[in-house]
Image (cartoon, rainbow, N blue to C red):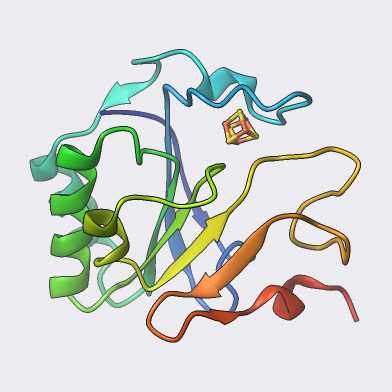
Length: 149
Ligand code: SF4
């Protein structure tokens, strides 16, 4: 699994300081994609479970959530990372363009954003978006937290 970009983000998971890993190799090809640099497989740096753990320890006590932008196409690498993050007490989140992901991934997620990018409907801050952000354990939809007041 390769990580194109790593950032500390505040908006993508409401109420959390998230360590955001953008995973390359997105197979979905949404028209108008805002991140086409994520399409190419293996662009960026290889991320192993070992260096992922180092990141998590480095930010422990500062960040509260681990966010993956994609990566569901590498379940055998993604699942152990999510599992490890939860074992340390981090919340976990996946942004996927798919409508659903396999149960083995969902099991280790606190939050998930599903749905492809459709330009005319907009992202989570749009009231007419097709995308859904929800808390996995309750299935509660939390899109309202993204709508500007
Ligand atoms: S899921 Fe995201 S990164 Fe992948 S093609 Fe769609 S908009 Fe682009």
